[in-house]
Image 1: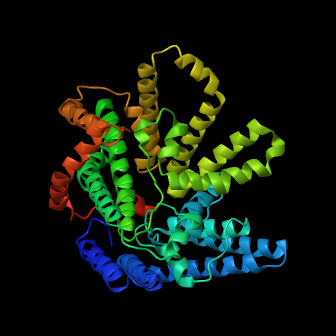
Image 2: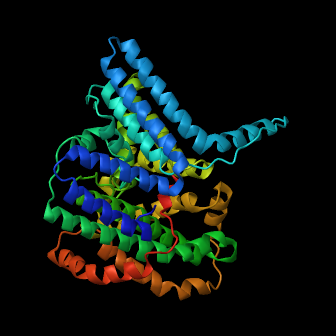
Image 3: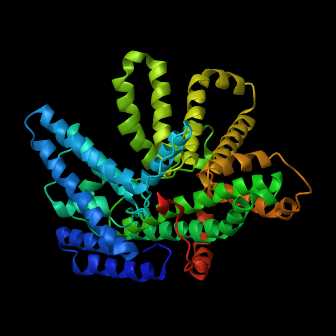
Length: 467
């Protein structure tokens, strides 16, 4: 089931009414309802993969209890590493099996040895990367002594499988979400209204911005050999708007739906197009993922290898973290390059911070800020070419053709369109605290709702469903 579907339009009010009007006296009954609703929501896609979700949930729930009650450090590590191995093993099998097999074959072929292993037609379970990371953070936090395990399988299952965030995040932490699940909740009218506004705003980003751009983006990236540089650059910019509207739209809807049930989710996007550096961008973009890798990958690396020296450890930690970040997004070398390009930029910014500050101090603040934002978003558009292209070779060819200019009729035809979206970016995406901005958004809710209902029920999945 998807947020932008007719089924969800029926599903959500039914769950809401039962949750607040029939089960409002018992938060335990509400949790049972949320669990059933979550499994129905997930099973609507493919009920067979519910067993994988339930197995993963049971594994980490039991592991958490055993780690907490273990009498020795050795036993704690055995339970921790066993659970991590099984979780990563399942994720690796469903998401990366064919990728590793194909590269293994290619490696042997390069030295003159031909192998014929079989690949499998494996269906990637929806949201497996997200709920696997939920479980991993839970057992690691128990092992580190940050939290105590819950004794309720129902509560833990809701934490892992909570339907607003199940298939595309945000990646929640037990320290933030589980306490909300384990305590009574009362309906708050203002929070409910705020939740509805977030749902409308997220639907607008998805249905009006991302989905209307999608056909043009698909055409440009699929037929890039037929277009010249201006159109390809335009396609990269379009995809930046598409992926932001699509993914941040999903996150807004998820947060809005959850607010309607009295549960607050983590903020996943914080005006990323306002970023003045790639480092700042990753503090504002997919925040739940970047902080997860920072806490559970980067920090342990820095601590473990601190004897290498501060700079060496930080460089290694950043590059390895972004290597995994890229690989998390998909099984392909294009995703690895996408991650490494972001890592290289952040390493560069780390070592040149003082020099860049000194250089930019010579410019007026407005020029400095504008130039920094343009460079940052321009670099991210470059990285997103690898993210969006069919494969690594296509990414490289696409970028090469960006320097090929002819009459470029398509670019001229689309000039006013891109100008409109640049103006929209200022209104929709850039950070501002002005009253005019807040009031303008309120006025926009009514026409937005009309446009959403008119375009909502088109078969367009969210981009991050595939991760």
